[in-house]
Length: 215
Image 1 (cartoon, rainbow, N blue to C red):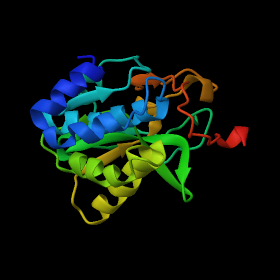
Image 2: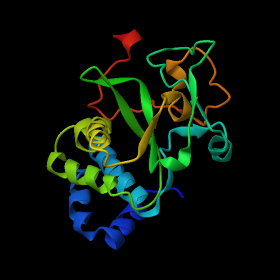
Image 3: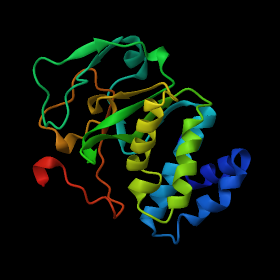
Image 4: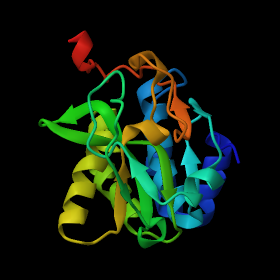
């Protein structure tokens, strides 16, 4: 299903009427790109809490089937980060996907306070995980701030780190090369176990971070 602002508004009226006014207020005018991104970020967490399943941004492009992904029990490149090409011999270990409530992707280059961040371009989750609504509740008092620190990836990273430390969630952060392969950041084609590309070529105005080789 492809979600747009109209279908999101209907969803909120049905499941989260307490958030409708706040959600509409995020976007100040038609050309308010930051407000639109906040609306999308806020909505994705609530949608995935109700329905579960697999959420992908519209600037992702599938390269393989999810069935193939679920059928493997090996995760590659867990320890590899901040590179433009993958080493010939990749670290790997066995994994039981069913032991987690949700999966997220790491960012190959993004960092906050010198720690790796997660992205929200791809979310795979069972339904009913209360963590997603907690991300929204955390973001609402910060809704007039930056995208990254309200409902965006920095906020998500901070909350996930605390929740995992307190063992409140069963979450696995995958290396970026599965769901967050950014072609213009890499010097090689994606590996056969890659699931989707993330073209990630749109700026919303307050994401001025550079990748290390551009700094």
